[in-house]
Length: 382
Image (cartoon, rainbow, N blue to C red; front, top):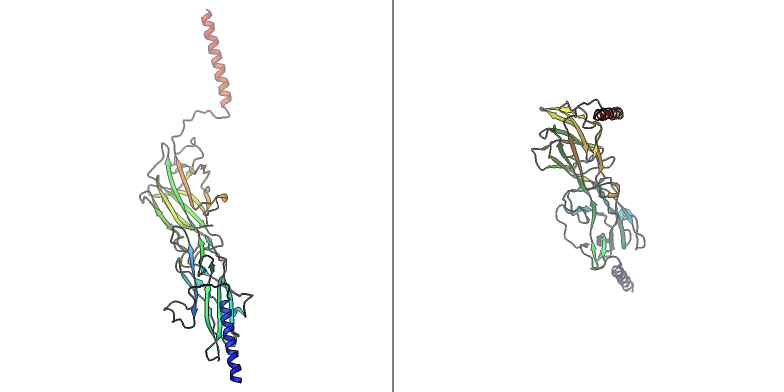
């Protein structure tokens, strides 16, 4: 009799577990489900994981940032228990797509999965501090089914399901999570004009990139179309992928008439300051002498009227500034450009006439003309 009762109880428990599995509302027709009978994963591949990718249109760059996650037990499920059953450690991104983030799921014991049933957890990515990244707030779902072993002597994990969402059309799970990553470019170009403008002269330009307190976690590279008209002297921002950087980095270049340098893969949110500081005269770098207008005497070879776009620079402290980004209302651009124009014309001859003396000169001229006309008229009368 006792054996029959025990057998009936065991059958009821099995049926209860089957019913619970069948009634699971969140996981119809799932893929990539791990069960206790699955073979061991390939070397280097964790048994339980979810995938993390970065979406960046038309580019393969990605930030080598370290991501952090939090795990929470979901309510409304059988035996939600403590979130110490599931853990996710910090993970450093190594490629643009399909980074496998390991999920640690402990085996049932006296402190983990203390009862048979269904356990559900959510894994949420913490918002990081990397420029250009929009962190995905959608949680990753982890469902763990715990049952008794065949001998009914211990609890075991029957099935683990890890998925980010359910595709309502196909009723299949989506097992990857994607962060959007946005980068842009800054092109610095040079034009030299005027009768005395030297189109063969190199001008030294600095570009300060300011990340503030956030991080840049990818290399920032430069591209030059014509290396006879431009070159990069130093790029402090081309080694950010290893450890990342905050604050400012400077890219120093020389450009001449018709030359340009494009700085690539600048993350959204990074601001820039472009400043022309020197002219290379006979192989020697000399500070520019800024001409306020064409009447100034351009005696020095490094004397130029400098404009950033349509704005005339008043001194060596003048510059062009902006921020890489897609918010056009804030004046941002993902394809920013700064055109530096240098103009040097022949000086106008000194006439001694100024705006202050011009009215008096005109009055004198009119008076002289009047005297001449009066004299001519009198001669005609005689």
